[in-house]
Each structure stands twice: as C-alpha cells, then as structure tokens.
Amino acid sequence: MRIQYPPNVHIIRTPCTGRLETEYFMRAIENGADGVLIAGCLEGGCHFIEGNLCAKRRVNYTREMLAEIGLEKERLRMVNVSAAMARPLADIIIDMVETVRKLGPNPLRQSDTSRKLETVS
Amino acid sequence: MIVAQRKSIPAIMEIVKQHKKILVLGCGTCVTVCLAGGEREVSIIASALRMASRLAGSPLHVEELTIERQCDNVFIEQAADAIGRNDAVLSLGCGAGVQAIAERYREKPVYAGLDTAFIGILEERGVWAEKCAACGACVLSEYGGICPITRCAKRLLNGPCGGSREDRCEVRPDRQCAWQLIYERLRGIGQLDRLKKIMPPKNWNASLDGGYRVIIREDHRI
Image (cartoon, rainbow over all chains, first blue to last red; front, side, top):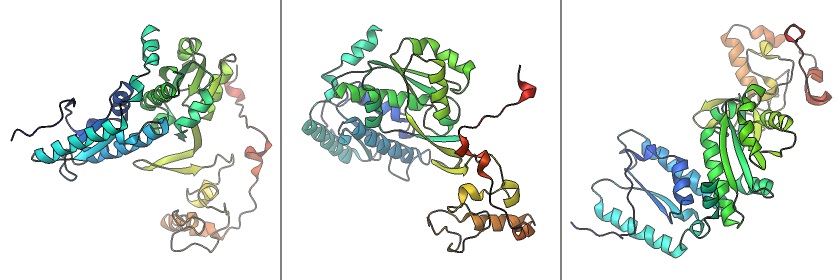
C-alpha cells in the first residue's frame, strides 16, 4: 500500500500496551520527546484481555500529571488501532505530529541543566 | 494498613522550592501497597519534580531511594548516606514515617509528599476504604466486626439513626449504612440479641483528645 507517515516519528515496539507504565511516559517526556503516541489494539480486542484498557487509564493519569507539571497534556495521546488499519494509523500519526508542531518543541529540551547536573554527581 | 495519597506536584514544588538537591524517599510498607509512596511512585514523583523545576527555571537535583520501612530506625539507617548528601528530604512515607526521619536527622529539613488519610483496606482494584479510626478502645466485638465509629457517618453506638434508604447512608448516599451491615452481620452469626443492649456513651479518653498516645510494655523494656 506504501502509505506514508511523517519521518520524524520513532517507533518503539512493546509486547502489549498493558506493559507500559506511567514511568515510561514520564521518562520519554523528561528526556525530551516532543510527543508520545500510544497505539494500542482496539478495545475488546486485546490478546491479554485488558492490557489496552490498563494503558488507557495510565495514559489518562499521566496526562493529568503533565498538566500539573506545567506541560501540555496533548503531548501524550493514546489511540486504538488494529493491525488492519494502516490508513487510519498513518492519519493519526500525521495528526499527532501536527498537534505537536503547533505546541512547539518540548520546553525541557531547551533547559537540560538538571540532566547535566545529574550526570556530574 | 495506613492509606495515603500524593500531594499535587505544584503543592510539592512550593514545599521544596528553596532547595537545590532533594532526596525523594519512599517507604516499602503501607504506602507501597496503597500505591502512594513506594519505589514506583518515587520514580514518578521524582521525574515530575525534575520536569516542573526545569520548567520553572531552577532545576532541582532529585535523588531517589526507597527503604523497607520509614517508621523504624533499623531501616532509616539505610538512608543515612543519601540523606546526608542532599539538602532536604521529601518523604513519601505516612505521617509517622516523615516524623521518624525528621527526629532521626535533626539538622535536615524533612517534608511530607503525601497526605496520610486513614487506616483502611483495599476494597477493589484502585479503591481504598477507611475501616478503623484508631479510637483506642475497640468496640468491634459488640457489632459483629463492623465499626460504627468509623463507618457510620454519625458514629452512633445505638443505631440505626432511621434516615437510611435501603442500605444507603443518608449523609452520603454513595456509602453503605453501617447499621444495616451490622444488623445483617449479627443476624448471620446468630447474635441479634446484642442489639438489645443499650450502649453507654463511649469513653473517648483512649482517643486523641488528651494529646498523643503512648503504649508502654514493661515486659519488653530494657
């Protein structure tokens, strides 16, 4: 089908979105990711019954936490797509990249003094 | 177990803003089980504080550590080095843990990162409910193991109040009526006659009103 999606997306495979923890989302943003898109299986279609539902709750929790921190919660988003939904997935990725572009770069990347401090000590 | 929940990130930032290096100290006992202050929450809150402080323009150096039990000197010692090399400690223990650390390290500011809520149990995944008010004089044996002090909104020892609807409390309809539960429980164990007894007003001397409570066991003292 040769469907295109933006090249500035880094794909990370996980066994199931249920494997994803709040810490992972936090670390991704802390380390400078402009946005994190979680693509889980369709609701009701999880091989592990409720892995994607667990992920959904954790994503929602983390979004609230990002707001508390002072970051835009739109930088973290979860969608449900099946393996047969290439076109919708590409559109979602394009939309996510567009959303993030409007928000601008992750402000944490401009001031990483703290990370340098951590490496030193 | 003791049940607590985390303070908001802005609230914690306000508490620690005068420091440059802090230790986020978790506790491996009650607050780990109630998902408020264990190793995982230490990692999440530390990450959040690093991000929030960088956004505020004054980056915090945040060290993470979780010890088995903060309310016990034997375990507190394991945090000595980490506490020593930081400006302050943000404890994710319960109120007892925070105070135990503060008493042990008198020269070090120790702050609470959690709001300690109550003594309770996990009712279902992600839901904790209060079961014990630590009143100091337990009356559970009279009520079939259901505490009217904690679970009745009016703390009635001679209930029910008459305001409940079905099995719902009239004060908070999302809560069960403790006296309905007591009645059903006593009927189930064949002890309904206990309800005929009029209970005198409870003696609250054993509770918190006379200052903090101390238990002394002479047989265990050295």
